[in-house]
Amino acid sequence: MREFVSQLAPLMKEYASYQQSSGRSSDSYAVILGLFDKHCKANYFDSKELTQAMIDSWCAKHETETNNSYRRRIYPVTSFIRFLQKRGMTDVVTPTMPRKEPNTYIPHAFTSEELTNFFNACDTIHYGASKQEKTRKLTLPIFFRLLYSSGIRTTEARLLRRSNVDLEYGVLNIEYSKGHAQHFVVLHDTVLQVMQEYDKAIDTLYPNRTYFFPFGDNNHHTAFWVQSNFKKMWFQKNSAYAVPYEFRHNYAIENINKWTDDGFGFNDKLFYLSKSMGHSVVESTKYYYSLVPRLADVMSAHTNEDDMIPEVPHESY
Image 1 (cartoon, rainbow, N blue to C red):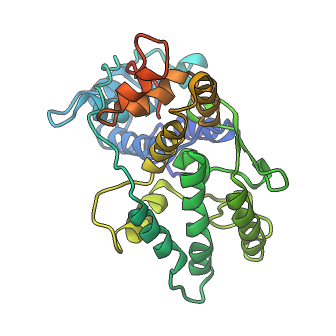
Image 2: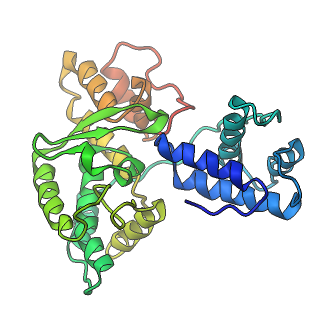
Image 3: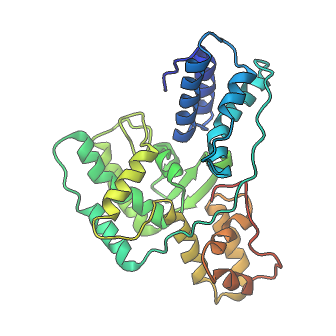
């Protein structure tokens, strides 16, 4: 757990423990709460209680911030305030959350050559004798194949517990997700096979591991680990910009494209895909098509809804 340094450290530790025990902990929350902690130490060293001045000074919007980046910076602190409010430990007022701006980024469309290059790079990692290097060699090919083949979020893969992976029937129990909605994912047979092989191999290094993809016996990999290793593998032979979360986008688009001639069954399959991806509403799954030029018309042609792809501002896709 992160070490806090301000006079608010006891409250922050209690909040962090609550987040972790309830499965809500995340790297981004921890980082931002740590920065807020340092802000309080530097500017309000003697204060042992959370004050409105602390919140107002931290939540003042910077000139260089967009609404979305501003939201990301203040939301973890807002969550901390609400935690204290519910327990009668503060009466400070939460900041007003700005409206989320529409996403203008168009995700990268993977080509077959790019994917072949990427997975070849994962499969041919050179490694030394250290336990960490062996773990990386075993984990990367399976971790990224799971993202590509299942559409689960990178965070869901990182936090996937060994006890929530059924390697007999090939089912993942995603216990905590965006919004903490439990859902289940059925693995493709080929991925199930390599995950079974991985489980046996990694078990020789971490026989008592908590997480399916372990960093030590009881820890999971960080978001930085995912990003940095993806870049190392991706840019060995690919030049276009891409990020690992786009495997999720690719999964949705590839599945939907396969159904365009299915007629009546299209809506049913879209519903099942939405549930598998952990979306609370089908509109979140449809939203992927709005990010790709010309695909919205394809989606509209296979449904009876007037507004097929509305903006979905409250859910991470």
